[in-house]
Image (cartoon, rainbow, N blue to C red):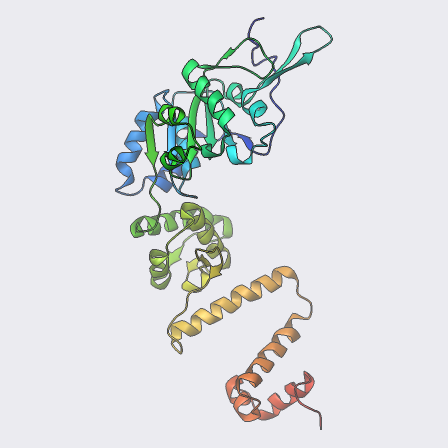
Length: 368
C-alpha cells in the first residue's frame, strides 16, 4: 500500500488542544516577536542564535517560566525558517489521554466500502513540510514518549492500526515550563528522549530583574493597544513607571501585556497613571498601589480608582446608580464621623441641613 498523500487523507478531527498556525503575514509576526523579545541587550545574542537555529532541522527545546514567550519563540523559529508548510501547535497537557496517540500520530480505521482502510492523519502529518510545536512536553505519557523518540530517530511514524510506517518531513519544536532535567531525574521523563530534544536548548529569562526591558515592553504594548482604544499618544507617568519596574511579574510577558491592556482601557487621554495599574500578587489576586496618605498623589489615586469602579458599574448597567452612590457616600461619611452630623457636613463640604435631610431620606436618622 502506498503511503497516503495529503490530498486524499483526512486529518484527525479538531481537538481543543490543537491549533493550526494562523496564516499571518510573516513580516507582521516577526516584527511583533522581535519587539517583544529582542529589544534588549540580553536578547540580542539570543536572536542571532534563533536565526541560526531556524535554518536547522534539529529539534528545538524552549525552556522558560509561564508566560515568558515560549510560544512566540516557537512561531519565530517556524516563520524565520525556510519551511513553507503549516505551523501546528499542540498543548500536551490538554490532550485527552485516551486519544492523545491518535491525535499526534493518526490512525487507520476499519475498511470502507472499497475494501481499503480509512486513513486519518495526526498532527505530525498535518505539519508536513512545516513545524509541529508541542507545548508542555513534560505532560506526555511514557508510552507517547517512546513513540516520539522513535519518530525523531527514524524520521517516520506509525499510525495506530497501520502496518506500514509513514515518512515525515516535520520540524519538531517543544517547550517545557519546568526544569526538564529535574523531571528526567525523577524518572517521569525519558532520559534518551531528553538528550534527543536537548540539541539546541533555548532558555528564556523571566522578566523580574529586567526593569529596562519591562518599560520598553510597556511602551510597545501601549502603542499596540492605544490606537485601538482611541489613544494616538500614550504617556506613562513616573509613579506608574516606578511601580512597573518594582513589580515581580510572576506571569512574565503575558501578565505584563494584560496589565497594560487593562490600563489602556481605564486610563484617561492615553495617560497611564498608578491608579490605572492592576498588578497581580503571587496568589493571582489583583492589588492596587498606594501613596502617602493625605498627599495630593494619594487623592488623585483614589479618585482615579473611583473612576475605574464607576466604569464597571456603567458597563453592568447598575439600576438607580446615582441614588446608590449618593447613599453610599453619605452613610460612609456618617459612619466615619461616628454619627456626628456637624463633622459629617464638614467632611462632605455641605451644610448640616443638607446632611440631616439626606440622613433622613436614607433612613439613617429618625424623622422628626
